Amino acid sequence: MRRVKFPVVSIILFVFAVLFAAYTIWAAIYAINYISEMVAANQLVIKGSEFEVANFLMSNFAQYAFFAIALFALGRIVQVLSADIDDEEGEDEESDFEEIEDEDADEDAPTTVENSNAE
Image (cartoon, rainbow, N blue to C red):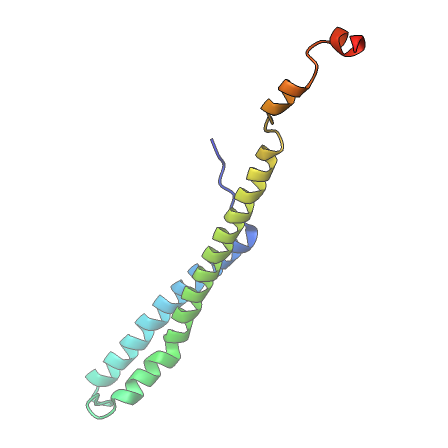
């Protein structure tokens, strides 16, 4: 059975991606609750200030969502590239031990030592 190896760099990138994703969720909940409270208290009217609301939300958590996605993608790329390199190295090791048969060599070579000495 083949054992799957994860590169350390890939694991580190996945851990950071999970941390950024968790922070993104926490920041999104906080920002949306803040906007909801402002609207409920009549301190903010969304109609006419959509850009400001979207800008507030984007500046609070969108960049962290992008970082989480980018780190996950980089971790996956490192994992796939590392697996391809391991597969190529494994194929090279196996090909070193292949038996090579030369059918033409048997026809030209003397069959016994006596025949080659007799000539």
